[in-house]
Image 1 (cartoon, rainbow, N blue to C red):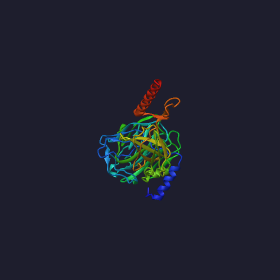
Image 2: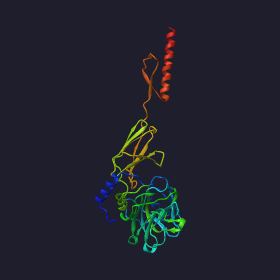
Image 3: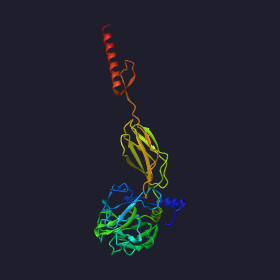
Image 4: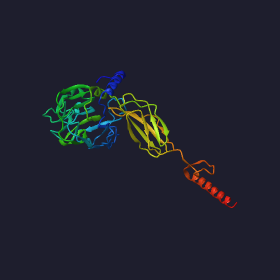
Length: 375
């Protein structure tokens, strides 16, 4: 895809934001896990971490993106992969796979770039990206029954290429391959796996001993077919929405009321609360730009930041953090004596000092009564 101007990117973002379907990825592995990685973080928020295995590592060679992207996945073509055993796929529903791919001409071999389920026909969910003939084959379901798309990949070797693979799934009417945001192959019928699938491997298909050789980055799975506008945004390297501004925290009794300014292109927000004695925040998903945080400890300080998200992912946290402490409720009061005979009015009922005051007043009343009885 050619260079996208700021105005063009803003137009694409506005169009994507106005689309009916805005759900984000069900799995998202960035490949930003360090030079000697162990765990591959799932940035979708759905809790499916992966493990770098058999020599899989990261590389500082990355595509040019509009968000922080320090490293990419690096696979040696001899068994290296990122294994995500906890990822599950319910069957033959709609899907989009989107990722960046960098394969040199000399690295082309019979391979698979990923697999969900590690299964063959009729439950394929993988891509030969590319195969030894320099063709990319996208397989979803039964490849003998509308489950395969393919297109020549020769012109996309030796550079970073954005790959998007979509299918409407079982008995659907559309499947396609997009390269750098451009539709390269499509069909008006589609298939899908007939069984639920478990496990994801990025960088190969272990069950068939087909291993990817090259670099991959920013690997995403969606449980819907992305629109062409959304795919073009991903291919442009766009990131999540910008940092929200104007975060304010107003204390109230047992709660803190928060508000912030809307972030362009956002479909929701992550409000992150950290108590004074903690380091890991509690993340609260909010649809609008206000939130009342209830059930807090009076007088205890809480710090907040907020980030915005959309179908691409999460944007940066607001800065600086704001800190506030909930107010304590006012003390209860009660009259001393049903007829207020001592003329004391009311006193607060709370705390040991106030109970001591009440004891003194009661003693004075008792002494006064004793004195009157002796006259």
